[in-house]
Structures are given as C-alpha cells and as structure tokens.
Length: 420
Ligand code: CTP
Image (cartoon, rainbow, N blue to C red; front, side, top):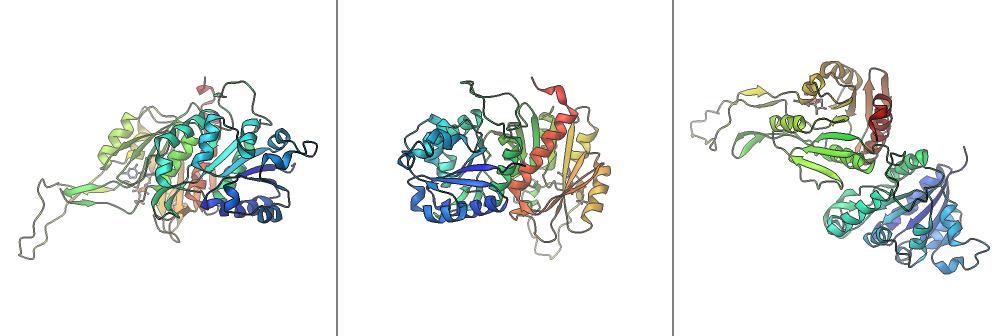
C-alpha cells in the first residue's frame, strides 16, 4: 500500500500541544506528515518540535514558499492524500467557511483539491455560538468532515463541548477518511451532495435513543440509572457527521445537542416508546438508551411524607415496555436494528442471548467491568448472527465513528437502491 500523506494544519489554541502526539501517532502508522503552523499556532508549539517529530520541513508563512521551484503553495496543498486541521479554531473554521485566504494555512485550504478533515477546539461558548454552528453546517455542506469536539473541563475553567478530540480519536477519523478518500475532490463549483464514501450515510434516516429514563414516584422522587448519555450522543453526532438525517430521542441528560441532529427530550420509558414510534420510518435505529426496566406502579400526585411511625411506604413496580423488542416486531421495523448492552460478566454470552430475545440485528455489547458507566472510553463487541467483531478500547467518539462505517456498509448491502 502506498504511504499515505497528511498535510496537518495546526491552528492557534491551547490544544495545539496535542498535535505533537497526533504527529507521533501518524508517523508510527507509517504516514508522511507535513505540518503547517498558523501564526497563532506558533505561539503554542514550535516549528522545531514539529520538524523533529515529522522529519519534514514545517511551513509557517506564505513566504516560506517564495522559492516556488522548491514547493509552491498549490503543490503543497495537493500533494497530500488528506488535509487535516487540528486544532481547528473558531477563527480558522470561520475563514474556511467564508473562503478567506489571508495566510498560508487558509490559502492552502482554499487551493486544495483533497478531502479536508477538521478537528475543532475552542471555548464552549464559542463552539455553541450560532455563528460557529452556521459555519460548521456550511463546511459540512461543502463536504468538509468536521469532527464533533469532546466535552469536558476546558483550559479556561469552563465545562462543556469544545475540547479537541483526543489524538487517538483524530487518528481514527483520519484512517476512516483515508480509507474512502477520493484521489481528488471534483471541481464542480457546487458542493458534492451525492452520497460519497466521505459522507457514507448521506440520504439515510437514523434514529438514536440515548441516556437514562426517569420514572417518577412522586413529584420530587424518581427511579433512574447511571447512564450519562455520552455514548448515545456521540453516536448521534457521528451519524450526522456521516451525512445522515438524525433523530435523537434523549432521556434527561445535561448534554448539548450535536450539530445537525434533531433532538426530542423525554423523561420516562413510555414517553421514549411513543417518540420512537413517532420518529419512524427510519433506515436504522440504534437503541443506546438505558431504559428503566420498571416504573412505580402508582405515582403520587403529592410528595409522600414520613408519618413518623417508622413504617416505610410500599413501592410496587410495573414493567416498562421493551422499546427495542417492540420495534423489532413492528411493521415499520428499520432495515438495521441495533441494541446496546452494558454487561459486567459473560459479556458475549449475555449479548447473544439478548440478540435472540430482542429480535435485533446487532447487539453492541459494552464491557463495563473495568470502566463503569459515565467514563470516556468503551470496549465493545458487535454481536450478530454472523459472529462477534471485537474492537479495542476506544474513546466513545471513536467507537461512534467506527460504528457509522459499519452501519453504512451494512445499509448499502441491505438497502442498495434507497438513495436518489
Ligand atoms: N431496551 C429498550 N427498552 C427497554 C429495555 C431495554 O429498548 N425497556 C433496549 C436498550 O436501549 C438496549 C437494549 O434494549 O439497546 C438492551 O438493554 P438492557 O437494559 O441491557 O436489556 P434488558 O432486557 O433490560 O436486560 P438486563 O436484564 O440485562 O437489564
């Protein structure tokens, strides 16, 4: 296989230091890396460090290229197989979206005929700002793959989405983009909206459930579980990134809606079942929610009070509908129906039993013995009638993206003529 060539554009942000690890990972995988540092990027990492790690010249300004005989900017922008922007700052994304070219990085991005992958990093408010979201929608419409940022504590002390995805997750996205990258992006003057390997779920409708459900006992108490919703939200984000029309039916979690995703919030299992039914038809459904198996048989309109007698009130339970099993039997069963299962022991055996019990096509079995619910990584096994596909432990975003590739291939096999 020929050596893959990456042109890595490093924007100015505190996360720029992670680009050093990314270069190391790409080199370790045998790729050639050429780095371009923006003026702001130079404030965070030095050209010398990047040159040493990439074993290549590092470019910082248009004037580095004044010897057009050696390497002109057009050539630099086109000799790569993939252009990667990491970190992609709010400013850089805005310039990309509006086609500005006032320095080397933006000039290369405008001149390139190669696929572009952007890994954003910025303050949470900047990420959530309508202008940034607009720019991302524009870029995705133009065919740029914009990764969803990670969520967490930021260097500035705030909390939320905006952190640069981990280098390992960016490397994973690069591998996927390279696997399907066209030799060059067609020069049509119009964005390429046709389904492409770059947007492998274009034209597909995907339904995702995520988070826990809350089952009320009285106005102040409820039955719940520890689901954080992170894996389901990452899956919805990855499906939108891959070009799908995504409906996310979410239990109560304080997570922001991923760009390009339509979200319906619910509280109880029965509400979730209703919204799932209302969201059909769908080409694939991915049921990641940790639905409460039971609800309180009677809900009290008023808060239950202690009467001082030491007697505890009885709590009778009723079984909730099994949304996944119900969907499997419905007339509108999606062509690909996927369940999730968090297990602590005998993971594969339990998953096989669940596959049969629920009537779905795949169970994504999640081994939670080492890493309890709410963590940032998952080790999953995809269990189907065809066998078991076990993946390494990966960040939840990387699991989501890898799953989208598998789903796209499966849908192409099951529903080939569905696209226009
Ligand atoms: N699920 C569902 N509706 C329910 C319960 C579960 O749709 N009432 C879905 C989940 O979203 C998940 C899959 O079924 O995709 C497996 O969930 P899990 O809780 O592991 O299944 P259970 O049948 O509840 O099995 P267990 O006894 O292990 O809790």
